[in-house]
Length: 507
Ligand SMILES: Nc1ncnc2c1ncn2[C@@H]1O[C@H](COP(=O)(O)OP(=O)(O)OP(=O)(O)O)[C@@H](O)[C@H]1O
Ligand SMILES: [Mg+2]
Image (cartoon, rainbow, N blue to C red; front, side, top):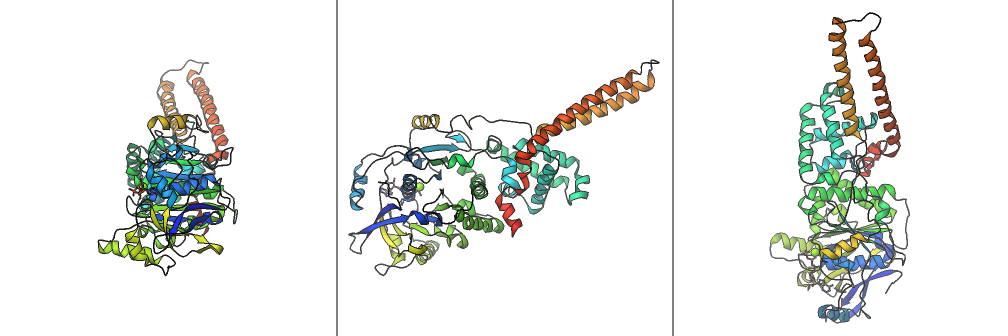
């Protein structure tokens, strides 16, 4: 079953519909990215499942989003249903064996899997601004906020930290404007309000610690199979911006953390973006450019990215041009726009003299696709009409009990489940505010109390003042120590973070 150099995808058909040959994805081109497209119900998710199974069996960890919950079945053994067995015969998959795969369930909301978190500083100003749909001026303020946090040693971990920092910035708007340029109270206020909206949408769960360690999505099992990380994305889909930002963040993390590896005999990780149109829908040009950069550059880190979407026109041309391995399921062609999409989809393939690509796209059956994988020297193969093989794991969703069991037995069980709230910007700014208050109260006391009463030889007021001020120093010292402790870990990275930002700077 484990083929060392390729993944079996299905069997291509001759013009008379008889068996032609096995179609395979060459693992050494697995990092040259891919695309799975097709109208709803045509077999995209099953194709994704088949690819993910193949990568896992080849020892390649996989990360994929599960939009409808139907990909979760990959964690369970398949069953010999008639239509599956029939399909296995058609594609000469013999023996057709069933298998369950090593799955780790994740969920940004922590309900259907282990929580995935990132800190605010890891997310970086660019992605946050994108997530919050900020204007250019507001984005400028966000950049300044990150700089201030960096310079003043304020750790930005969760939304509360960012809120506290923004409140602090609003108070010092005049002073900061003089130093950094325009920081207006209204623009800070607007960001604060957007943060509240974000919070009400449940994003607060996502920001904080313990943050996801990339190594945890790159696990393999003792028997050499790649773990399949399945992200529950049904609820996430209701917030497309969060979904898109999260996936971009994950890609940029991978890019930053993984070393250059050049050409490998198989990828180190494969990433599936379902509903990929959400990444690009009303995304500003800078962001699309950066997605394009990341996709281009991440290849040399051994990461393959596979986009799954209904229509190839959903993907910007520059990104599309980099997706080497293609599976095109059926498209409808009723409206002019649909006909246009079919023609464009057909034009992206290396033609096959046996059939007209555009016509074929509209006639494909469920679970059938036009397939063109990269072959020798990374050249796209001639397009073939291909019946996709049936999966070895279960088709369709698992039950909540099955899910609970897998989550409980997962290798990361207990590692992410509880949020940790260590001292960061929120607490530090609170302390500072309290100190300022104390100092003021004390000054008042000195003015009023000190002037009215005095006991000769026992300057009580002064004495208390001294004690207080020495207390205050201890608090300040503690704060400084905690900053020093944390600077090494995250604050220093705040600005460098988010490859998206750093890439832009590098160019
Ligand atoms: N390779 C295959 N072998 C056997 N059956 C298949 C195959 N591909 C698809 N099918 C059948 O078609 C059904 C729909 O496929 P799938 O869920 O993959 O469609 P989809 O394109 O992901 O749809 P949507 O856009 O609604 O998510 C499957 O539940 C299965 O019954
Ligand atoms: Mg689907």
